[in-house]
Length: 464
Image (cartoon, rainbow, N blue to C red; front, side, top):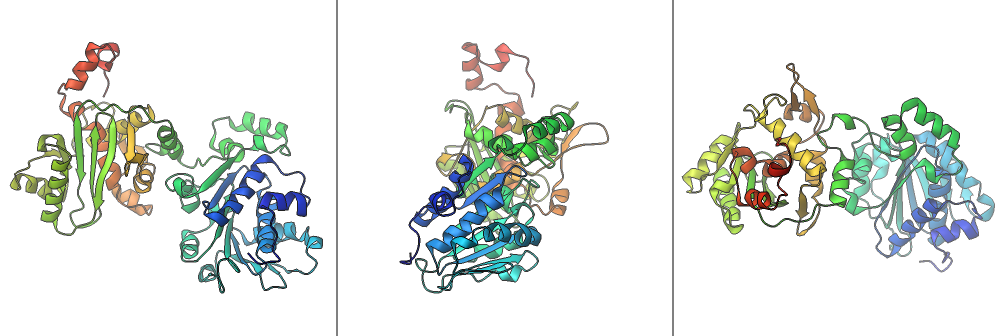
């Protein structure tokens, strides 16, 4: 840090140097999270209710603190709307220009006498998002990257920023579509960020009467109310097999581990294209064993076999996706002396009345088991689920076919929406549903729980 820099934390700076005495608790928390990045803290991502004051009371003081702290530093700011930068952020910073008489406050640029600066640019200029690195050292002229109204910023901007060498990062926005890098910061990539969700209840300046009017007009569970006041991502949620918020809640409140019970593995095959995926369930514990690409199908089958044996699995406990290009690979297992069960997702469902085909039944019923707290998920020997699987199973839609039966969105339709084949999702949900519930056989686990009176067979109606 330069000798002339402030030693105040961001929140202290806002309160004592800028005299912003009306900061809310959440604004103080978010400002302090930015300061912690100096010593290795996670990047900050904030989703806030409409009209919460995030630009004037969070972004603006963050920029001013950074340049006071690092007079030679570089701040790069973009937004989903350039008007947001020109008409809101820069005017919010100019309010404090009397505190920094030697600084130059221009239209969308701010300069310090030592050579530091803040620069705002439009998202239709992706080239300006590249090439930001300290010119001296990260101690003297580090880089801070800010994305305001991040919900509408294209992914190519985020990708360009990923190539930069930054010490500080802040993403902030009201909720938007349930896709994109900002959304993923609160879901699939949540472990990579310090996150804060700010509701209108935490903003005393927002008129409670307006909140009540919106609640009555739109309904407390409506996507519009939940977005405006609860800061929730809601677009198309009602069409998803499982929503990101429901999956996150299931992960945060995991079911207790049940080590006893059947072992089931599900293999999804790339056949030289996407990923080979191996998911396994022991009792109620579901784990990604491995995922890899391999253009040699024989070698892929041998790796599946080796991994399965290492996990103590027999071929009869393993299921493989046998539709399309998967069928020759299932046949290869028999040739290798390790025959497995063939899973044909295009076949009729077990529950013919409600589901269009077997893969739809597996996805929907598997997701319901997760939501109901029946499954304990682990990833890389830790709790939870890997980001790629998280994204895949929270991106697929449910549809109705022309017979009024439920089905999952086809992979062709997913590809048209820019989504990759959900190979990890297939394997995760496949290992949850396949096994005794697929074959109709009774396991020791079912019998043991029946004796104790806790089995669903003994205490409730049975439904698939």
